[in-house]
Length: 633
View 1 (cartoon, rainbow, N blue to C red):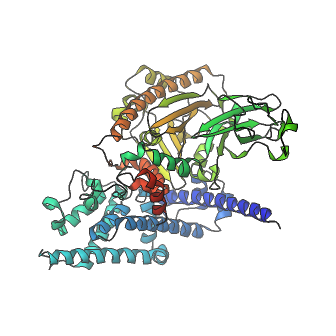
View 2 (view 1 turned 135 degrees about the vertical axis):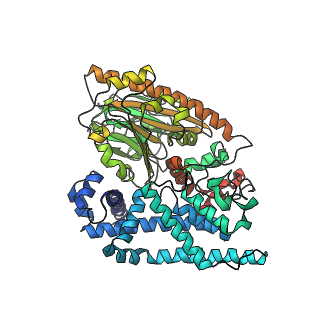
C-alpha cells in the first residue's frame, strides 16, 4: 500500500470518527434533556431519539443499551466539569483566595450549571440504584474538590493567624464541607427557581460566605460590589496588568477592548480562526445551471464555486495559475463552456483542468495536466455550500450536529432565493457584531419593537462544537408599530413545521462567520467578512420554500421590514460600542447570565487565541510568540 493511499484511508477514517463523535454528542445532549424531564427510570431510547430528531435505530447503533447511554452521559458531564475546573485552576495560580474563586465560578458557570445538567447530577445521586455508578465515576473528583477547598481554607486560616487575626475557632474541614453543602443547596434552589437569596447569584452567595469567614481579605469588610462578578480574585487586579501580562481570567469578563482594533491580533485571527474555518458561499439553488458560479473574497483569499457539466459543484481558488488574476469576476455569473481568465485568456474546463493556453509553444516545460485550478474542500449542508481554505478539522455536519434535528424541520435544502444578496460595509469589528447578535440583554432598550413582538422567555444555548442557538416565541398581540401589528394579523402557520416551531423565531450561529435567522415563513443567512481590524463587510440573503401565496409573500415582506429596523438599530449600537472599545477608559466589561452565548463565543476565541486574555496588548512583534507560548501551556 502506498503512503498516499495510507494517508487517504487514515483521513477517511478520521472523518468517520469525527462524524460518529458528533452523533454521540447529539445523543448525549438529548439524554441530558430527557433525564431532566423524566428522571433516570423513565428515560427510554425512543424518547432520546425523539428529542435528538433521530430514528431509534441510530440510538441503538451508537449505544447498545440504555445503561450504556446513561453512563456515557454522566461520564461526559464529569469530564466536561473537570476540564473546565482544571482550566480555571491553571489560570488562578497559587493564591488561595483565587483558587476558591475559581472553584466557585466553575460551579456556577452558566454552561455547566444549566438546570438540565444539574438534574442529571441529582438523578444519579438521588436514585439508590444509580448512586454506586455515580461514586465509581465521580467519587474521586468529589474527593479532590473537597481536598482542594480544605487545603486552601487552611492556607487562608494560617495567613490570618500570621497577621494576628482571630482564627482559633475556624476549622478547615468544616469550612470546606460548609461551602460544598452551600453549593449543593444553591444548585437545588436553581432547579426549584427559588428566590430565597433575592437577586443574588449563587456565586455571590458563596462569596458573601467567604467574606464573612475571612473579613480581613476584603476592603471595608466585604467584596467590592462595583464588580460583583469578578469576585475575590479580581478586585485588586483589574486594570493593574502591564503590557503582555495576562488579564484576570474570570469567565464573566469580556474580551479586552484592544482586541477589537489591533493589526497584529487581526493577523492571528486570520491565521487561527478564519483560514481553518468553513465559509458559506451560496445555496445550491443559486447555481441551477451548468457553468453557474458564485464567488467569495475573504481576508486576501478568493474562492468560487461552479457547477460542472456533470452536475457536480466544485470549489477553486479564484486565481489563474499563470499570473494570479481572478479567473471569474463579480459576485456571480456563468461560464459558457469554459472558465476563461480575462487577463491572458488561459482557459480551464468546468472541472478546473487547464485546457487552453494562447501561445502555448512559448512556455518552456508547460505541463497542462499539472496546471489546473487549485481545488478547495467543499461541503453541502442543509442545501448551503461551504468551502474552507485549509485544515482537516470537523466537517460542517459534525459541528452542526447538535442543531441538526431542529433545522431539518425547515426543509432548507428545498428553499430558493427570495431576492438578491445584500452587502453592507461597517466600521465595526467582526467580533463586536457577534457580541451584539449573541445576547438579548439589550433587547428592551435597543430593540423596543422586537421586544414588543416576542415573549420574554429566550432560549440561550451554546455547544462545544462551536455553534449556538437563540430562540423566542411570538406574542399573540403586539401593542405598537404598523409592521408589527400587520405581521401578527397576517401571520400564517406553516403546516410542515411541528407545533413548537410554528410561532418561533430562532437564530443559529456557526462560529466564526455565519448565522441563520430562521422564521416560520422563510430564513436568511448573515455572514460577517472581516476586512481589517475594526472593519467588516456584512453579507446576507433571504431564502424560502417556493410558494404562490400572496398572503405568505406579504408576511415575508413585513418580516423583512421588521428585521431591517432591527439591523439599523444594531448598526447604531455597534458603531457606538466600537468607538468606546478604543477609549482609554475601557479595559474589559462584565458579562451577565443572559450573555451566556456571548461568553461561549468569546471563550471559543480565547481558547484558540489565548493572547486575547492579556489585559494590554503585547508589542506587535511579540504578539504571535506570546500567543504560541500561551497555547503551549
